[in-house]
Length: 212
Image 1: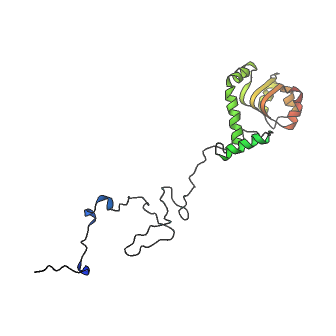
Image 2: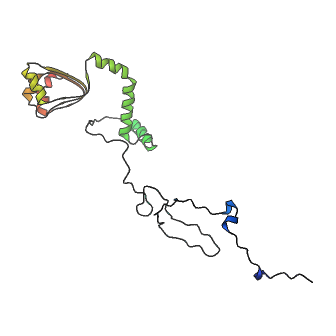
Image 3: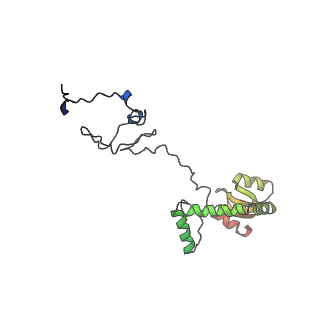
C-alpha cells in the first residue's frame, strides 16, 4: 500500500515549553531591572504577529528616581568643592595674550575648570615649591601665620596696661570696625601685613605712617 503524506495544512507544530528550550534561546528578564514602580514613558511600539519589534525610548531605571520623561532627579547632588569668598581677596593681574590663550586651551581641554582654577593651582604649586624657604623666613621675621583679629576690647586692655603691639602677619590681619582711630594709634606701634589688612578707612589712615 502506498504511503500517503499529509498536506502542508495538516502539519502541526509541536508545542515547546520554556523548560525544553535551550538556555541560549530563552528570554531572561533580570528582576528589578526596571524597578518595582517604574513606568516606561514615550511612544510604545506593538509587535505585529510573527514579528518582534524593538522597544524604543524606554527610560532606564535608576534608584535615585525620575523627573519628566526619563530625566534623573538632581535634588540629591552635593557640591564637591566648597565655595570660597569670605576668606579670599580679589586681585588683578596682567597677562600676555599668548599666555592667556594657553590657559584657555587647558581649560577647554578639561585640565582646569576655569582661569581662576588654573591661576590658583599655579600659585599653590609655587608656594609648595618654596615652602622650606618661606618657613625659615616666617620664623626669622617673627610673623603670625594665618588670621589675626584685634577687637576693641583687646586694644582697650593694651591701653589700660600702657602697652603697644607690633602687628606682623602673613595672611589676614583685621581690626574691628568699631575701633576708633585714636585707640588704634595709641596701641599699635607698627603694622606689617603680608596678605590683606581689613580695617576701617579711618584706622588705615591713622596707621599709614606705621605700616611697614
